[in-house]
Length: 294
Image (cartoon, rainbow, N blue to C red; front, side, top):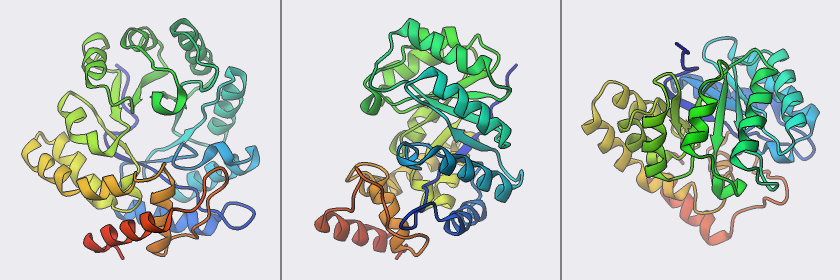
């Protein structure tokens, strides 16, 4: 039986920037904040990490920095997806060489593969590496949705262990749980759906909100793992307003702005992402103040 890379709360950590490169000192501070908050895994170079606007050298150095700094305390998972299978294989192999514990691989974007193409894409990547692969379904960004039947086929591969589900489609999630074996794990890809997905058998969340409230997201997921869905539901509702604020503009603009307000990084985004609208910025600051974060 395949083991999950983690259960509970994995943080999809932002990538802090200076004017011309990655701010590695700030990244280490952020990792310490997450580890002190009790997160169960660290995910680097994903959507929240702005990997799409990072150079290959920056991505690899960021992965290496995270692996060295975390030093085995929790699993480090690297985002290595691309809309070219060959590129995704190269990124995945090099991330493994850098020492990651697992890989998060988004569905190919823009060229919109068929379901047969998705199977071949993922089987090629998983067959080229020696670490577990988590699929990542986020059709709002990629334009393609991975079907439950496709998950069931991919679950047969020994290196494919589950999916980060950010489709927002609960019928699909239920169908996936029904079709796939118990060792094909589902992680919520949306903070505001964490408790409901875990109620359906999910193993945790790959979280944006944990960047600013790691302890609270750990508390939520661990209540679910312990079967205390009354407490988990109350915690989910407690975090509702914050989760909404962190997505009032496209991710990761609000969460990086929040972390800058909290003093963890500079407020630097790479185009085409840009600074928040002033009205949204003030709304975000007000919500952070309500939660005692600024």
